[in-house]
Image (cartoon, rainbow, N blue to C red; front, top):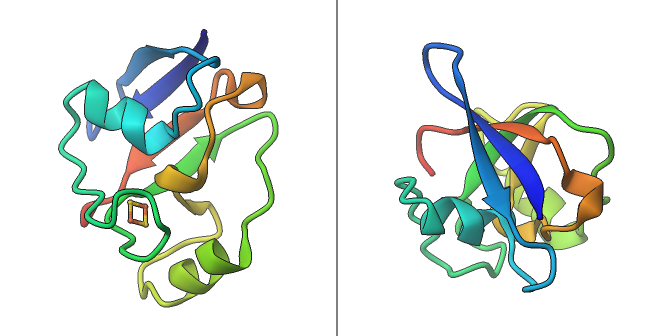
Length: 104
Ligand code: FES
């Protein structure tokens, strides 16, 4: 398992444990932990309601063209924006700190 930290409004960080051997996305881990994240398209990179901002990470996978295109269309996206459904839970993500964006 790896640890994913979710930064709260007050700056507190909640640690979530996520298994690396189930092919989960970060979006699915957030949902499983009862975060209110809509993920309307179910992980197809076409709704952006799983938008997160990555505050800290060791390494991140490259964005696919679909993800980059979707993020470009979001007016409030930042350099650190990612679609959490496109982040596969693996060792590389251990210790990642993210913030769930308001529309997610
Ligand atoms: Fe729709 Fe991620 S769940 S873009």
